[in-house]
Image (tube, rainbow, N blue to C red):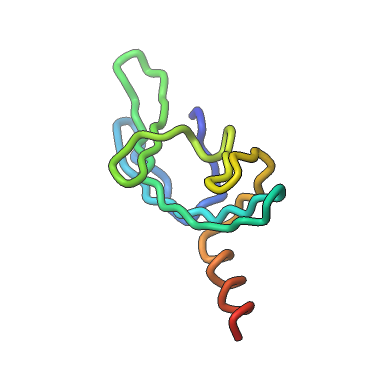
Length: 97
């Protein structure tokens, strides 16, 4: 299936139809150092022609897959580390203690 990955914290989508998976990712930009977390609703589709595909949504807007060409929300850089959810929040807490 296009754009699918086991990196996030969600579960597999529905088989043989459509289903929505909720996934969260942490991002860290290797260019500017900015870190953030983002939640995605990933919709799995199986149209009548049998070619499965997925679409990514966040805050009600369709967005490109964060795994194919990630972009820093701070500097528009494309060299990002993608991690499981909670990693950025954990690092921020460690910095403030």
